[in-house]
Length: 68
Image 1 (cartoon, one colour):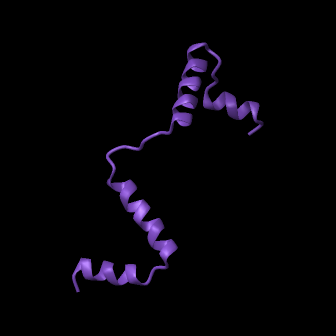
Image 2 (cartoon, helix red, strand yellow; image 1 turned 90 degrees about the vertical axis):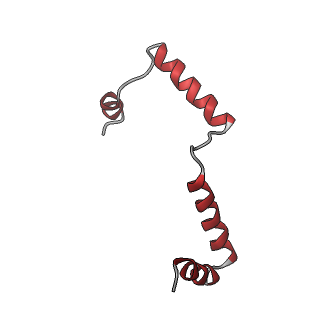
Image 3 (cartoon, rainbow, N blue to C red; image 1 turned 180 degrees about the horizontal axis):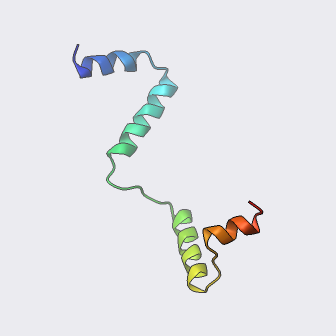
């Protein structure tokens, strides 16, 4: 059995919901880079601005502040 035949057999066993999820995963894997939404970009830029203003803490400090 070829890889394509085996894959076709596996796909036939999936529910429609499972097939949609796997299709989305495959399409995501085929993209060259991950795209960020406008909201995510705004959060990234806000975070960068906080860092540039000196309002950021390093990971060790954050864990200390959280009591971890």
